Length: 164
Image (cartoon, rainbow, N blue to C red; front, side, top):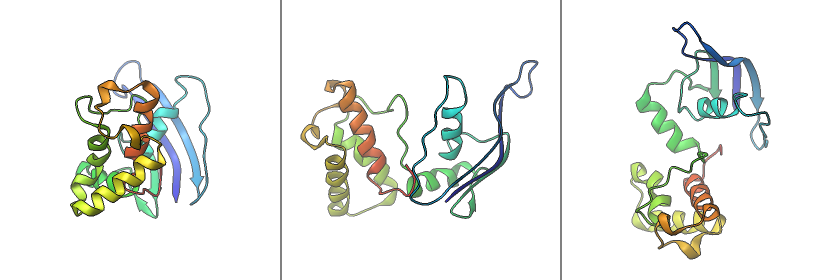
């Protein structure tokens, strides 16, 4: 499902002080496997996840997901790839504070042009899975940290992604 070969990420690559966040990472994750990344702060966990999620591009190496080379896709294609295949839960949740829980969860479905019935069904399923359905009408700014986290989880699950 995910195949990473000789992946490198260098920040400030063309400066006098480049930072090698990832060096020659090789990893294979099969369908159905659960992977836990563990390491000290600054060890590259978030960088690796951001590359897998196509939020940032590697300096070199390959990222192959379901046989497709995705590391070098143009931005338009990476957006489509993320929306169709990935559920991503950012560390800071990236929720819209003035929108309701339900509206935040529905955002990833907008480009899919689903029927209202399908959108509502997917939303309710995701809210139930994340145990946040009881707060669906509340705005994000009124939620606790744990409730915001569960909203972000529901948003990540709403399109039934292959990879979370």
